[in-house]
Structures are given as C-alpha cells and as structure tokens.
Length: 415
Figure 1: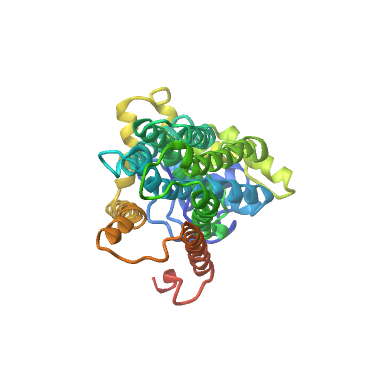
Figure 2: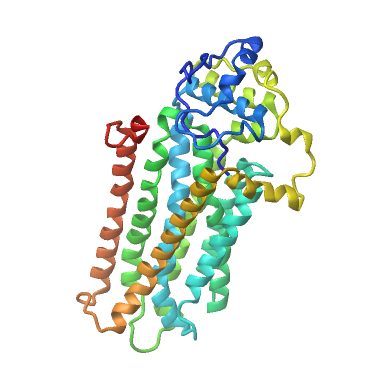
C-alpha cells in the first residue's frame, strides 16, 4: 500500500551527495535525474533498479509536498483519518464488551463465536481493501470501507439470533479491516517529510476509540443488562443493542463527514503510480493555491523523467499476475523483505494480544475463581472507561519521541 519513497527524504533543496534536488525547469530535472534516483535519507529501498522513472518522479512529488508543507487539509486528514483509526479499536472493544451479555441471552454452544467472526471479517477486509485500493484508488476505498462498517454495526444491534449477529459483526469488521490500513496510507501519502512523525501520533485515536466505547458502555451496560443468574430475555437485556446502535450511528456520522467535510482528492502518489502526471500536478497545485503555499512542480518535470512501467501494461490491473506484483514488491530486496516480515510479525503479535487480553483473560480469571471487585455493573463499567482512557497517552509519548531529535533517539546520526 505505501509507495517506496514515502520515507522522509529531506526538504526541498537538500543535498543527497551530488547536485541539489531543486524544482527547476524540465531541462534541469534531467540534469539531476541521477541524483533523484538515489536513495533518500532514511529510505531502505529505492525503485532505481525496478522502475527508475517512477523513482525519479516520486522524489519530485515528495519535494513538492515538502515545499507546500503542513496545511489545514492535513488537520482535516488527521481528525477524520484518526477517527477511522478509532473505529477499529472501538470495534474490537465493542465485541468484547457485549459478548458476555449476548451469551447470556442467546446461550450459544460456542461462547467465543463473535470473536472469530470479528477477526475473520478484519482479515478478509484488510486483504480485500489493501489490494483493491491499489487498483480502484484510495479515495473510493477510503470512503466506502467506513460506510460499510457503520451500516452493519447499526444492523448488528437489531439481530434476533446469535448466528445473524456474528454475520453482521463480520461484515462490519470487513469494512473496518480495510479502513485501518487506508487511514494510515492516505495520511502518509499527503504528509511532508518533516511531519511524518504524526503518523505515530495518529495512533492516539486508537485509545480515543476505546475510551468512547467504554464511556458509551458505562450507562447502557450498567442499566440495561440482565443479571448473570436467571433468565435473560431481550426486553431486559437491551444494553448491548443500544451500544451497537449508538456506536454505529457515531461511525455513520463520521463517514458522512468524510464525504462532506474533507472531500478527499485522490492521493498524488497513487495517481503518480497510475501514470497520470497531469492529475498529480493538478492536485498539488490545487492544495498550494487553496492554502497560499508555493509549488514549483510542473508536468514537464515529471514527463522528463520518462514513462513508468505501469503505463506500458495499462489495462491489465485486474489480472492475477498483476495482483501478485503488489506482494512481490514488498520483497524486492533482502533488506526490504526483512523489514516487511518484521512489520507483519509485529502486527501478528498485536492481533494475538488483543483478543487474549480483552476476551479470554476475563474468562480465564473467572474460571480460576479470581475476585475482581464488588460485582456492581456501575463500578465495573466506570473502571472500564477509565482504564481505556489511559491508552491515549502512549502514542502521544511515542510521537513526541519520534519528533524530538537527540543522539539517543536519532539512530541515523550514528550511521
């Protein structure tokens, strides 16, 4: 999803060991092309040997984004993309919040069925949207994934049986799985290099999503849940339904805000990969004009870099061989393959830790007779909201550490 060249390459005019990467005229672009196709500072992979023209164009676009700098458009992206990030954590927590009461009402033979449904939906959604966003574009996948997530979250609250509820949760997670990767991708592809530490800070929205789920659960799950002993009819167990209705409506409102407030334009780096140089310049010039910023990038500069490989194979995007290119590109070199593998492994551990902590740990402690408090629903859900609120501050600290350059934190100074 993230294009090589999204790594920080320094501001416009920074010297990479040869001539400077200025904005210049078309002729000047050609004269510094060898410099543009070199690795930028902090990059672990270059398209030099794979697609030299795309590599040169990507550096020009990165420099243009740096020239424009941080704008009000980025503020909107941070909030609305961040909310999408919050939706995924809210979904994970929502399912673990309602599962005990759902089990009391429907008494399913397999108590962890909702957890399986959620993660199957997330996995399929991440694979589907991750691949199709490279084909149909970030814009449509970015908008529709959150809309799908919100609609099926609302519908899940109306489910009358366990199987139907699990099905709607899986469909909601299908949208959420794609939304997670697109939030970070769209944000990163618009960020100037000096602000890319904000991608780490964006994770604070993960904690905000958990906090919102906990705060909504506090009144609903306290006052509208049946007791653990005795019958549990629908009429006395509406709390988990109210939880889904409220959270789903909130997500729906934000998905509409994405369409009406931000009015996302296709990201310039995706458009560049499609060989549409004119659209790249149009998008960046639009942003520069709207926020009164300079932008010296021209179509002639991009054309002078040559034709990228995509335009030579245009029209075959949906073939199986072309789809595998997206995966093979993550292992172009030994170093890039190692980086990809480590990132996947990290996410695997995160995916393992969340259900273990939020779903299975409470059951394990209860099965061992652990005393976890007074048993009051009000106290339980109050503490739940407070604990999840604490998840906001870790990413804030991590973002600050990424932003502050010291000999201890800036490893690049020692290489």
